[in-house]
View 1 (tube, rainbow, N blue to C red):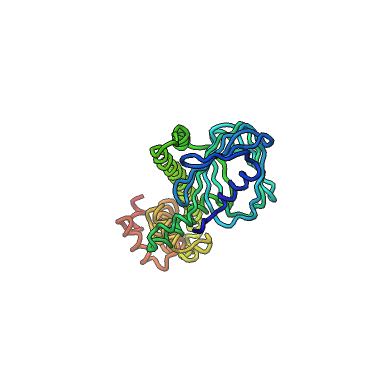
View 2: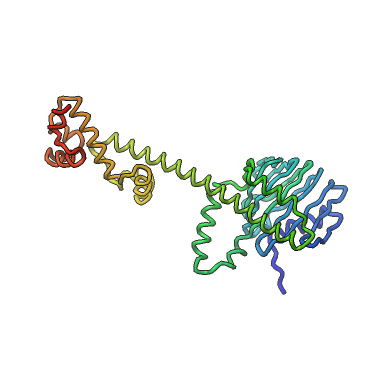
Length: 325
């Protein structure tokens, strides 16, 4: 029988070999007790199922390092800090992080970093590891490609080029973390509770991040469509085509049309016509320009076509509109 290992296995094997005085096999996992010369406290890990496990630590004081160069697969890690803090230094980029009480972190193992140095102080944490490559094997192959694409897109949106993200945990995540901490894992019921709460914690975190990404996307949509409207308004006499507008905004025609319709209720073409008519109404009301001059000003080919479009939107001809005002 071949025992498959991953980066998490390597990490805890390294801890066991270098930093531990002893290990304790428990009903649902394993505990790693730190040698006195390195500090005081312990690590633990519990396998929930293939591809999913929960681990943690309770350390009063310790410093350690880890060689990340042998990492060969991507595992997503999400953690919560109950108390104290961890100072983290990544190399060779020399970035420093502080993971402290009430914080949550998310980390992807497959990255360009060589080493990590950790400094613990009165620290208690939990971490959930998910190996998507293992979990996806249980998924119907019909949906596999779409699932992988969606997963990768969501994770890339969360990290946005970062490797480790630390931020304040939400109320819901703090609550679930406290419930996990209160579970005793000495029997089957304990295992069931830990499994359910671990999945709930991970699901809640990813759902919160998904909503944040959606909000960012909406903000980006609003910004881009605002720019599109500005371009149209500034060039109403020679309004750009949808293709030209998309090119100016460096986005696809499909995305421009989709976002424009969602945010304005009009297609780009309909919006341009409405802007032209509104400008015509202003000129008819506030200037002495002739119908021909107004037609040219708003970019229509001839007064007849302008009059037909104007009447369609206002139920009145341009000339009668002017007289009514």
